[in-house]
Amino acid sequence: MSEPMTAVLLRAAELTASGKPRQAIDLLRPLVAANPRHAEAWCRLAAAHLDAGEADQALDSAKRAMVLDGEPAWPQRLAALALSDLGRHQEAVVAARESVRRKPGDWRCYVVLAEVLADLPDGAVEAFDSALHASQLAPTEARAFQVLGDAALRMRDWGTAEHAYRTAIKLDPSDADSKANLATVQRRRSAKPAPTQLNKVQVWRALRTLSLLLVGGGLLALVAGMPRPTPYLGFFTGALVLCCVVVALRLRPFKLLFGLRKLAVTVSLLAASALILSAWTIALLFGATTMQPLVLSWLCAVVGGALVYVGGGRKR
Image 1: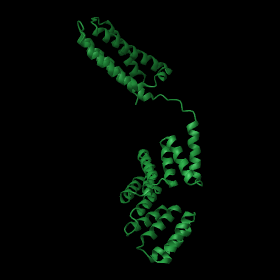
Image 2: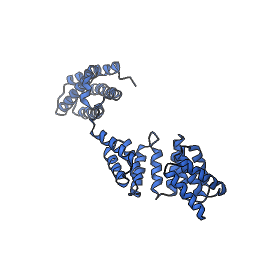
Image 3: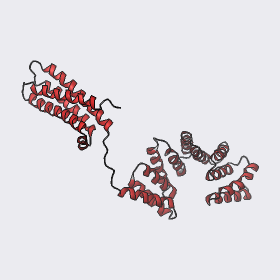
Image 4: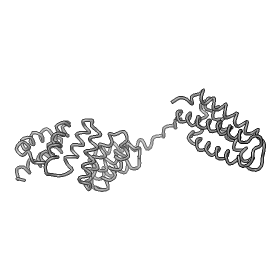
């Protein structure tokens, strides 16, 4: 590379870094026109367009650099950022993954991957992993820890976010964004937790399943126990009770179930059915032969099941 070209590229990088991308673009356009096969010049131009908010032009310049011999991952990183700015998030992730594939030891590739993954609805976990890997590859780079803090903040991992932002500030005391985000994290950590909300859809579905188990299983036990139950029937009803316990765990937090009268009555009936069935199972295993508790348990389950379907169990 000739000395004048080197000087122009360095000057363009300085202008872009100092917040003057338009001047960098004006400096680079004649350079790429005279040297259309110079990959670094196209990358510098793409970076300047990105900082100027010109994502279309940045993507075009990055694509020109991709087909030339040069730094293998830089054009892909620039393309990923441009695609993200254009709202083409899936394509941005593809380009970022390609940059990682081409240069897996470059922390900047993982930073870009974390940034574009954050725009996907299901990309938070992988974005966090990518940012964490970047910070491990570059423990002295403030940007890696800033992106890690952002990823942890989105996941509400307050401890990791605070550590990451503190590290970023230590590495770059002028990092205003990390300082502001650190204040946000500290404020959220000290805030009172939001009151637990009852997931009514999940509760009604669990109650419906519970009622089906108790009504259907109780009816089978009644038929199997006629005219005189044996201890072997206790193994079936014991398994039925265990299944009810597993389903009932989905009703947590239990104390909120009694805040609504309709739910309280339904839960009480089904709970009574399960408790009577449990007591009868234990008695049956010790030789009891009466069927009356099973009948009472089944009747409670029938009434409770009817309330489930009338009171909201069919709502989606």
